[in-house]
Length: 212
Image 1 (cartoon, rainbow, N blue to C red):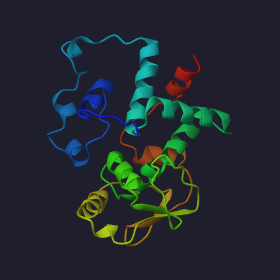
Image 2: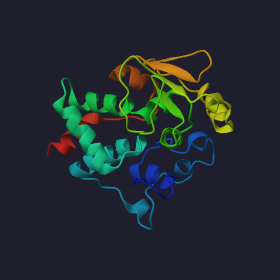
Image 3: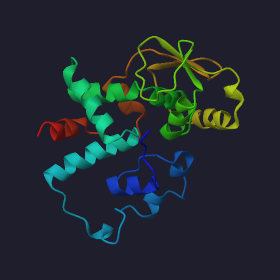
Image 4: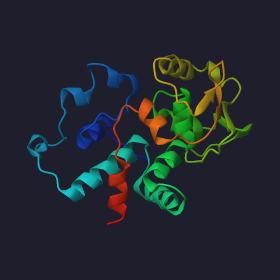
């Protein structure tokens, strides 16, 4: 399985925005983006002028890196969004938020989407009682997502649940009292996503990028 490797803090610096890819570290003084808010490389500080194409490319790359999706998969997701009813940009974000790894992250079972992806890939997550080990699996409205029995006692899960208590809860996910299972009510609309998303996203630029 192809995946992104390397220091993820460089991705934040390259996109010029804090993408919260390192979990708790992004909220501390150790955050690389806060210390060096310019692109990596010896010419990073000198990059000022950005073309219209560059703006659209960087927005696409930013969203792709937020959700941890490789280019080919991101393009397929965009094509599905373009073929569906509704506004393409909003539908794209809804599909990304409907991915199993995103749902697990929003439930608070993982500190980052990368951790959520690993939980799913290693078979720790169930959808409607069935084990699903595909992070890109699209969760349908009304589905119940839960951990495999016993996994809630894992130290990494306990830590994630503790961290999640300080985050804004996703209103499109109905979390159980124990915090280890939830019902995915429906894909989020744009207002719900804006309310809890700490990163500003302009999905229209992505539509323009692929429509050029």
